[in-house]
Figure 1 (cartoon, rainbow, N blue to C red):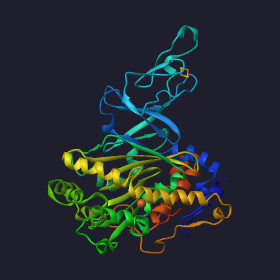
Figure 2 (cartoon, rainbow, N blue to C red; figure 1 turned 90 degrees about the vertical axis):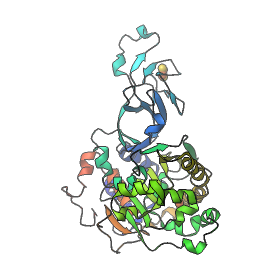
Figure 3 (cartoon, protein in one colour; figure 1 turned 60 degrees about the horizontal axis):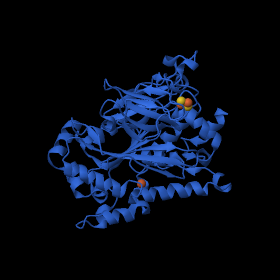
Figure 4 (cartoon, protein in one colour; figure 1 turned 180 degrees about the horizontal axis):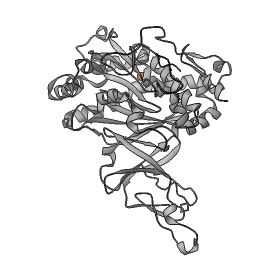
Length: 446
Ligand code: FES
Ligand code: FE
């Protein structure tokens, strides 16, 4: 029942019921009410630059084709043949004039229209125009391609809301925009997708303790001491007013970026022409003070680390498994040397074999394994960090802002998850928005 689902998460008291990570029935509802109703990241425009360029991806567990059209628009449709449901395209990416199903040979053009059926005279009732795969809505934000199955969902800009401010920290440093470094890394790990999405929305906490310290030490430039890496006292966390997004950042301090990405990348972000251009575009000094890496999740399953410039999709694969897809972007007008620094350092740090990725994955996978235990699932997890501390609006940073070591964005993530899980459609979901009939209180709590 919906009351039971709402009771799995407490924003007010700061806890979540661990069964949200393990329950198969909840997972099936999640595919329907979260993944089939949200704007989901599918890649970067530069990955399908020319007409006929395509890549395959997933929206939840639904396979999709993302195809650049001749008129430069982008279409996203179910990667499923209408005849008997075979996967239409089994390549990761490429350039195509049409997609021919390998089972009985039905062929679709790049827009997803059925154009050829072998022995079509044997299908006297078949209307080819009506027999294409399901099409999703497509919109882009500063190079990132998003799609949504739900015709009632708000447009992408409304969906992102003030999260765009934080996305711009990585995507809008130059009028040239960003390009994706070729290649998407993909791997499967046995844990629920929400561990990763929540951590990137909210958790600066783990980076300052044992989780990442060995990787930080390994990457520390020779002239820096560990004491230089004491957590800065200044930093903020963003929780979406509504919508489940979250981000967090230190102010000014770039030692963490130096340990992850090396001095050349730090210099690129903080000194010289590119840094000056970014500062001008950002306008307010306060905004320029956001120190990379800024962690961020765009609800539900897209995460970004500005400065590191890794972008990921946490694809659900059942309650106990996820498939991680990541790629790296870099300013389109950066030098080849900087682009190569980004390529090498994101492989070393945040990739299938990356030193920081290993730390995070180890924690998530072990938590999931422990949750096989009956008793281990019997009591809620604590998500109360920052409750009762000064939280609210900020003159320079949009959304609900608190101290950087906080679990407020995690509470926002789970609260929005529960809203979506208990709302059969967007009309019902919109009722929970600030200013709507079921108004949230001044803290944004329903
Ligand atoms: Fe595609 Fe039959 S399943 S042609
Ligand atoms: Fe981490």
